[in-house]
Image 1 (tube, rainbow, N blue to C red):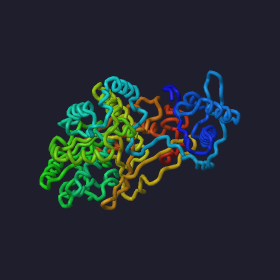
Image 2: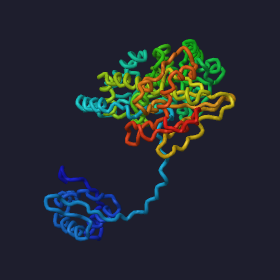
Image 3: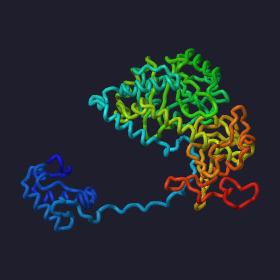
Image 4: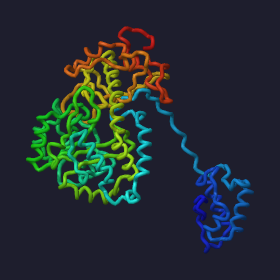
Length: 508
């Protein structure tokens, strides 16, 4: 078939009794009626199809003429032969169910605002990757990943997270879950410990685990010592879901535990890029590079759909990790790796993080102001960093996070997430709200965009955020229209999150 002709598969058998022309007609007729050839699709020219099937051109011409006469094909001089629109012969499609109620403001934790994805910067990085990528780089020979990306990650992690990583010991993978799978397979005889409460990702992937409690200083290492665990998964920069950072004393205790039991620490660098009221917390990897597997991902900085992560693996585990990688997915997409490497080396990722950090801080302040005004009995925590806030209600308060209110037509919907993990003692009601996409709806009030002043030295959210009650009202506005732009219409009344204390019925 010619290089410009479209490809077309036809089941064609010269040994069958049925004539050659009849076989071509039947195969094309079946492909059109079943929808395999869509209406408007161009079929190969008679000369190209005859050459591909090894028949004379006259056989194909007669088959096409018959299908044109039957209405399956359309032939126009100079425009080629295309598929006509005919009713498909398929099973009746199931009638779709009712559409779910729209959610205007999404507080579910674990997701960034995908509209902040740096499309222009990613497009530039992709063009640069295609321009500079060698032909040999398109192969997947090295399960660790492209050397150019591993070198860029080593520079980035050393500069931003204090990780002294050798590019030879970095493995590029599909995210934290993928990295945990590789490490768990490299430690088949080890019992893993997980934080409690903690996010459900490690619990789903580990065949067996031991829960270890978390307090105001992070993972309770004394409790970890009383377990048979010889490996632990931690989120030291911003614990999920409580938001606490692992204290310096606990970091040293955790490293001492790993050395005493010949264990390993899997460090999930969760939410480390987003901090607002505190200085950056260095990675745990720097204290014990031989014991800590440092894992990072682009799920919060860019988008979870990018499916890109990395692991800094200690040398003793490297061979086992690479052997597992070779027998599973092999390697990550070379084009994806090259584009992310260009994003790192150009400085566009740093610029994107600075912009998005400002946006998320403004939204966090607006959400906290709304909570202080309309839910003063809830104590927010974990607010100094990350993309979510943990709410702890007063004793006896109705359990939070269990219901998703139905939004009224034109109103503001609300979706919240409950704290994952089994409670270790009778808790107060807790819910976790993601503020990354909870956009303040009204640009008219500058105070709402700036948010209230935040004092990191106090945790009295009620007193702190009542200073600016007008900012709280913006949290209840519609957030964004279906077309993705901010809206001043369809604003929700006070009653969306609770009845107005003053009893007014006007929109906020």
